[in-house]
Picture (cartoon, helix red, strand yellow):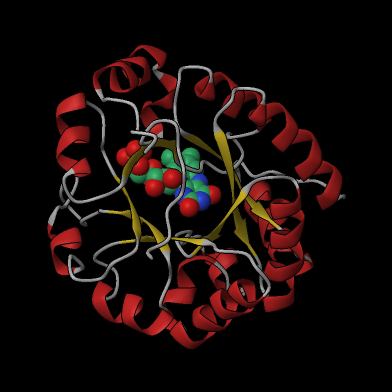
Length: 249
Ligand SMILES: Cc1cc2nc3c(=O)[nH]c(=O)nc-3n(C[C@H](O)[C@H](O)[C@H](O)COP(=O)(O)O)c2cc1C
């Protein structure tokens, strides 16, 4: 049977590093969203070093000394909304992903591997989008997690590398794809057309700002996600209200 993420509503708040803390996730979750994403967060020494460098040049990142207490506090607050919580993580090592993923799962949350971030500091330590250039490593991460009982979501941008080989090499059970196309605005449906034969749980992301777009995304995905419109609570509420709840059968 194919893997399913049980969400009360097929909507997801996508990661925004330095912004999506527990309180922000709780506020969005309280609008009825199905899943809220905490982070992205850096979960090992090298990726945290990269985050610190990024902050020095003005980017917002979550900086903390104790991963366990950061996760515990923020997951607890986000989960008060009743939404499923996922945590978007970046690491320079497989062991970093494994250790953090077990903490996250033990705290009742879903793990999302960040193969999306293209900040140079993060790519230099082998995290974020650089994983798309090392599919064997990405596969090892997924295999290590699955063999120890964690099913991660893989978050990446479309139109960066051909998507079908990413899926057939890494074999993820769940993906969260930013259907982005350089120089164009809006959700690029061709990304999901190219992977329509690959069965897994799919979350579609990019410029999902209206119920009309969300409904079209749900024709090719199991759920839709949004990031930047989270600043506009009325727009999020309109998405939640217009799209039917996930059926519970
Ligand atoms: C400020 C900001 C920070 C982001 N940080 C992350 C991140 O840490 N991890 C990640 O996978 N995506 C991150 N993203 C990408 C978003 O999750 C999303 O894929 C992208 O913004 C497109 O969705 P949207 O059109 O609804 O904003 C970030 C986006 C923004 C605007």
